[in-house]
Amino acid sequence: MTTKPALAIDGGRPVRPATLPYGRHRVEQADVDAVVRALRSDWLTTGPAIDEFEAAFAKTVGTPHAVALSSGTAALHAAAFAAGIGAGDHAVTTPLTFAASANCVLYLGGTVAFADVRPDTLNLDPARVEACLTPRTKAVITVDYTGEPSDLDELEALCSRRGLTLIEDASHALGATYRGRPVGSVARLTTFSLHPVKHITTGEGGIVTTDDAKLAARVRMFRNHGIAREHHHREDWRYEMTELGFNYRLSDFQAALGLSQLERLGDLIARRRQIAARYTRAFAALPEIEVPVTLPDREAAWHLYVVRLRLEGLRVGRAEIFRALRAENIGVNVHYIPVPWHPYYERLGFRRGGWPVAENAYERMLSLPIFPAMTDADVDDVVSAVDKVLGHYRR
Ligand SMILES: *Cc1c(COP(=O)(O)O)cnc(C)c1O
Image (cartoon, rainbow, N blue to C red):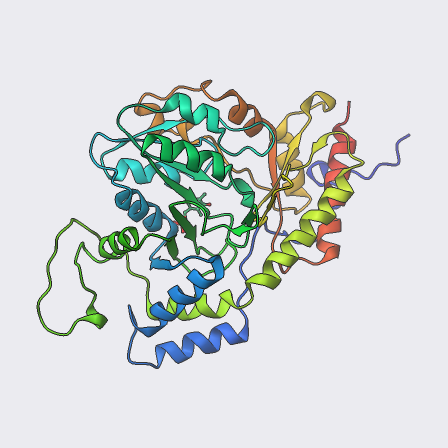
């Protein structure tokens, strides 16, 4: 006779009465007040709150320039444009990311190549990137997967040797540091997303940081139709459209929200680090779990906490574990389906099997809930549910 509790998926009682999501934004009264003040001001878009938010963000990441845009995807598009990617050009990125990291190259008429990742951090492997370069490669787009910074010095060295621009998609990594430097001040161009699941939010929003005034000016122009001067900085009626840009502007009241949220970034990151440490301690005793790897010369920002299952110790696959945890009301997720596996990319000619490290990791991974408002009891519920489900399916 077993005394093990029945899994919720088999009709047993779930570990939690209601779903714990994998990520969740936090809006406080100070944020609401800041947005209301902006709504009552003279500017609803591209006004003083944008300037303030950009200045504060640049200061936070320790670089001279930050340009706010309407989404993280717009930020990537603008960065790829600023890097000089045009029709027929090539760029290299990772397969283990959200599609936007690669789509930005296609928007500009370019072609993307995917380089495989390191087996430990699952970030781009610089040696694999090198093997993907062609005479038409203009940029490398690295992604700080889960918030662990990429091998930025190696990638920057590779890029400067070959005359390429390094774009760092740091959508997961606001608040991370690399060899003592904040992410946002290391690569030529860094992009962030301000979507509600990310570290701070403006609803929808994104931002590009750079130490290069010319690149910043190109991003700024791209966000405003390719027009050189912006409305609230304009003295007379003359303006010139010199590039084909977009309307990728962020609203002033969104910038006010971002500025208010940015003030709490330190606390938000500290809490994410505590949650990650609590998971890692708890899972040390579970043989079926590989915990995320972080390297000693960088501090992760923990947008995601991704474990890999040791499937050889289990009677079922990742899909069954995923469904059983969802039934326990643990909002697990998977980040990411490799980008070249998507039907759109398959139509471009990409075939499965080209990125064995990323693809093997994908088959075994689960993102566990992590967001600053989680209590220790919430973390312990996740650990109990994982323990319960893996115990049930153990060989
Ligand atoms: C969230 C995210 C994006 C896109 O950001 P949006 O603000 O949703 O457009 C791009 N890349 C990565 C890695 C992301 O996680």
